[in-house]
Image (cartoon, one colour):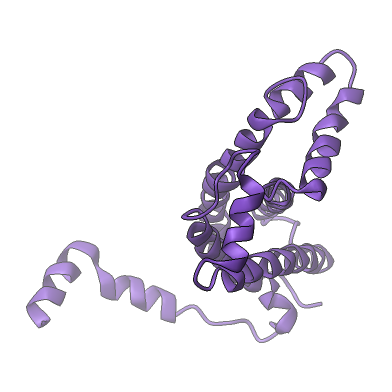
Amino acid sequence: MSKVYDWFEERLEIQAIADDITSKYVPPHVNIFYCLGGITLTCFLVQVATGFAMTFYYRPTVTEAFSSVQYIMTEANFGWLIRSVHRWSASMMVLMMILHVFRVYLTGGFKRPRELTWVTGVVLAVLTASFGVTGYSLPWDQIGYWAVKIVTGVPDAIPVIGSPLVELLRGSASVGQSTLTRFYSLHTFVLPLLTAVFMLMHFPMIRKQGISGPL
């Protein structure tokens, strides 16, 4: 076993990474309010796990989406639990994200030299809200359908480019299969990928600049 460890240590410098992690001390002013970002991350990981599990059963078509969700809730093994955890952790993620933004703002976490940390955090907040909007539509029930219709219709008020934006979001002039396909792709691929990218930018900057001052 030691030879295997030595082989990886020579190539990855595992001990140096471990020493760097364990040598970073938590500032004395940190309290429970500084855990909100970590809770948000935990909720996101739960979302990824439960969402991935549901992709085995969910069918992103206007004729089968609702029935597939019903199947998850009533027939798939532990499907009701997985979807319930996904739903409630989504609400918790949004709530924790909002509280985290307030905490960072109140403690001056947006000031020099943490401007880029703040910007990436704001982008992550927007992505979180986008997860909520796209995910809300996927059951394709009455609430989901009309939510999509209203949200995608908002840009129509913008002069000149409004109508093209609406058609871009919907995939056609009206809400239908193209809209559901777009929202499913956004929810399960585009948004998770963007979130991962900005997290990989956000967390190293937090580690580099440290945690902002006390409340």
